[in-house]
Image (cartoon, rainbow, N blue to C red; front, side, top):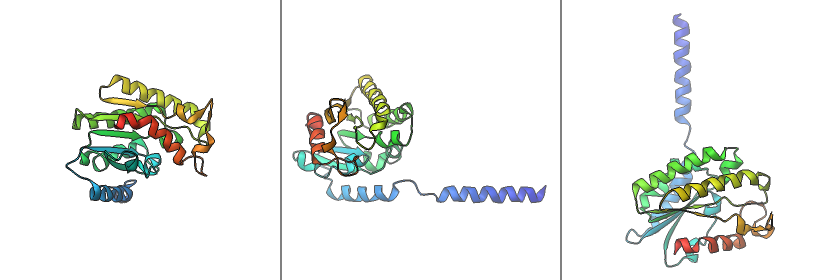
Length: 217
């Protein structure tokens, strides 16, 4: 029995070290975002944080669109709601924002997560944001339609419905629909995207600006 015991002990040690050495997803990218935002953040001003996946990350002119506000872009491409939950302290809470805009769920659905599962993660994120600052406003941005993921539209709509219901239930939480304005009838507008059919061009961000500006201002 002793050789077997030693083998099992060695096996468990190898497994534990393997998992311990696995890097947390987006650690390097989040560190770079924090370094950039720390360098431009004015602590004396009210702060608005936009965070989420690449649709936020690639919104390069978001500060220019709202010049009278201090806006930090904390988007990190490829992220899911669970990734935001893990990095929430570094990306959002450290800046003590009065408003937080969140765009997640796009990659979650593409990764075959059930809308209900994604909703539970959103509930955790919202709870932490409100418990940290009870007067903080949170804006949940609906998932967007896209050419490359149009076949998943029913799942995206289900998630959007759940996010809207969550916002209705909670004070200080709003839901903004960017799905419908990006449609032409029952089809997504093809001229809103770059070549990959997923990420938006300036026309797409013009629509987002119109949908979100009243919540920012």
